[in-house]
Amino acid sequence: MLTRRKVFLYKTESAKGTDAVPAVSADLILPNGDPNIAIPTDQDSGEGDVKGTFGPGDSVTLKQGMSIEIGTRVRGLGQGAAALLTPAIHAALLASGHTVTTAGDGTTVARSAEYKPSSVEANLKSATGYFYEDGLLYKLLGAVNGLSFEAAMNALMCKFTPQSKYTVPTVVALPAWAAPTQNFFRMTSALMAITEAGVTANIGAFNFDTGTKVEEAYETGQHYFEVADRNPILTIDPRAEVNANVWNALSNCTSAALIATFTNGIGETLVFTANKCVPMEITPGARAGRITRQKKFSLKETAGDDQYGIKWTSVL
Image (cartoon, rainbow, N blue to C red; front, side, top):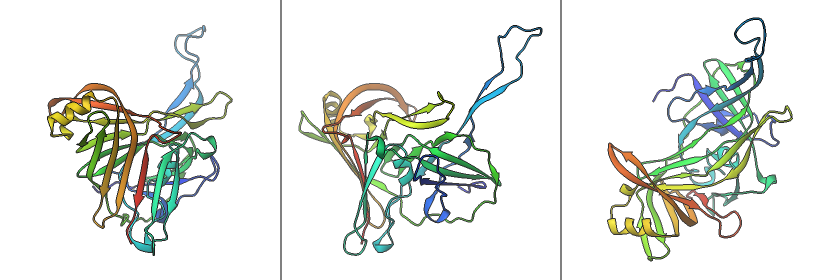
């Protein structure tokens, strides 16, 4: 679609709240749809106080925040030495409680970037978001976000919502930008090995939410947002598995492991892995006007922060 005069940039900060000054050339997130800035505001109007007239008194603004919902297709790194070191959503991954390990030089070894969740406080990062909208620049400083993926054969989508304290927008011209050249990922297989039955289910579509919990703090008068907890959830629609017997085995299992592989037009791969998926519940839902039952799994640790991994690998 042709977006209105809007551009979103996102870059990891060296220290929380320090403007990372994201650039169009390196930090552009191409949104799917039409994002809008939200500015939640808490005010004290003295409502309920005893006075000589009905109604509230003068309002005092206590705090204001900013948030913006971003959805984007997940792209690869590229090819050869020109491949990116990290994917376009790198800042969103780090600002949701992940660490990254990069490898490869793009010449003799293909570049790769692997992300894993972390509970070590020193590893928790924040990001700076620049949202340009109709001549104004909104800066989200010290931002953190949750993160989720919608995986299907036709596309892999990522969604996240950066949150930060409010800063007054400035009048800035919309920067010139061009769409990224990296290729979109599409799923080729999502194999879920069921522990008890020795059966492997090939899942055609699933949703994965990292379950990152973002908390707002204002107790000391310092307003900020931080990553506080994580409960990753995998949701599978039964119509994503065509074999009824396999679906029954999946529904009755107590544990399973997932390896989901995505590829793109030049042969890059993105691989989701989850070592221990424990069933939570079967929930009612609807899809294309038909009643379905969705299966939810909680991703558990086997040793430390190994609930899941997400790895990009480019091509030479």
